[in-house]
Image 1 (cartoon, rainbow, N blue to C red):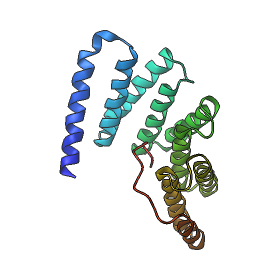
Image 2 (image 1 turned 120 degrees about the vertical axis):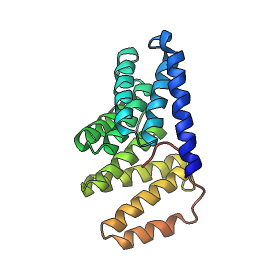
Image 3 (image 1 turned 30 degrees about the horizontal axis):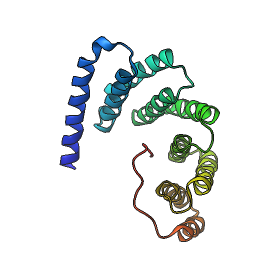
Image 4 (image 1 turned 90 degrees about the vertical axis):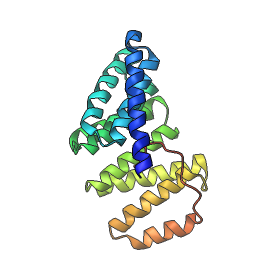
Length: 197
């Protein structure tokens, strides 16, 4: 844990230093990538308020530079939604998750890995905040799509199995959770990070 915290602090300093060096580049795409990365690092470093400022700045620049329908803008929107939830800004988080999922479905399609990632995150968000019908609907859809597109043994499919199983257990559906887990054993190693919650 300590070494991970040290790495996050080092990463934060690297991104801040890089931002200083890129100041004269204006809204160059690489500057916006660095800005988004700084926001992610701050958020992971539990500096949620600082991250919010960075994400909002990055979102406005990307929206102006690329438009709302660009994958890079959608990526920052997804990060903002997670950040809003970290800040306990539930209305803003839900609104941003929904807008991001709507745009991703429209632009990159229902079966794209980034769409499935935000679908997973919104489903988990709903589950954590008591909207059980929407949570179950999205988590089930995400699992079905991941199974079809990625296959039953893909780590992201298993992340969906894990999330839906946890949802079932938290909502008194132990039989459904057990059935789901039994169907998908054994579990492969965890997936590379896609900012899934």
